[in-house]
Length: 201
Image (cartoon, rainbow, N blue to C red; front, side, top):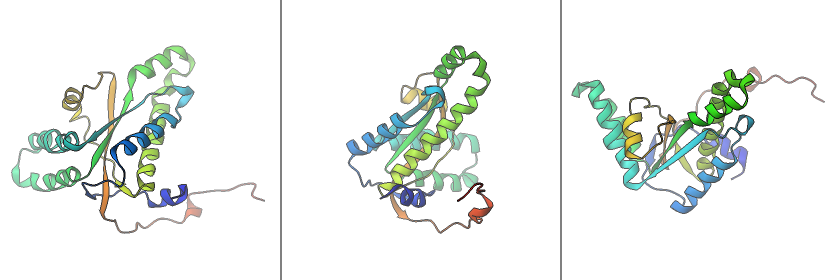
């Protein structure tokens, strides 16, 4: 699939199967390559990724996220809808956890003090670039995904379970897998309202 086709195919997909179109080794290598090649401001390289497959993926959703939210909601009737949603994420094949290494940013702030006030914003841009790159790469291989934000509620337990350095801040979680049901098309405003062009020949 060419790049623009993959961009068009990338969507928030919630109905996923516990299947992959790629062997684990190829999937991991693809995510590593996108992570390695993703740009960052002044080459700060503050983005970090954790890949959860098999039982580790299941544990994240069924034990950590589910039980953390159960305590927060503390009402079984109200929790039913949340439980259904989390079980849907658990049905996926794997999860990518996106992190930002605060220690890397501290080093950059010390190295470039004149730009220190910009690094948090620039790092967020880098986080988005990497997330979008991996999401689009998954779409190019026929895999669906969505982006979730159960942080900071789950941060501490996830860090303990997966031995995450204390300097890493959890940004988002991306469950992915073979698409069971593709979402309906979204209504979009005209592209002319989003893009202005000057100096066209």
